[in-house]
Image (cartoon, rainbow, N blue to C red; front, side, top):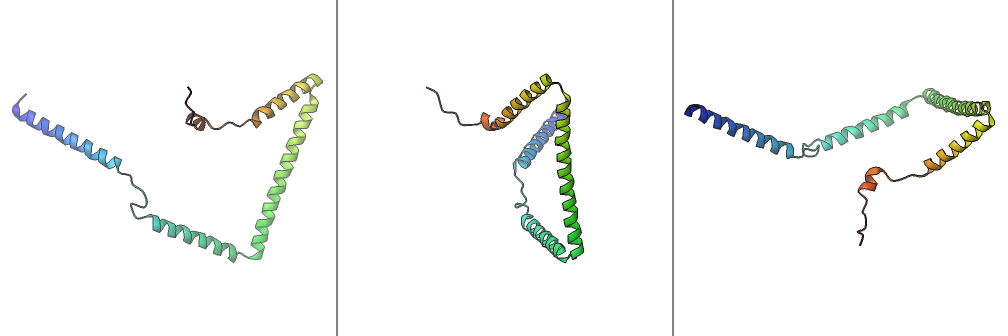
Length: 135
């Protein structure tokens, strides 16, 4: 290699190293909304939108409020009817089975309920739980 190419090569490596260090420094600086000065403006916008929603609720006519209430009531009735039909369907399917199969189904339901009642802490809670040191 020529001396000139070595000089440019070493300067290029210095440039690459300085870029790497610069990007490392930039990525290590935590940026938050508060550091950028946006938290107060965001809170103000949220407050204004909440106030606007309240005003809209109050400004609705009585007929609109009643229509919403009736729609919610119909939705609730529909959900109740669905649950009732679901239970009846389960009973109908159970009654179709032979007595031996019904007994097996009852046993499996009992074991499923028993297993579902047992609630362990999540995996990560159990993993990082403080364990006393053994002697």
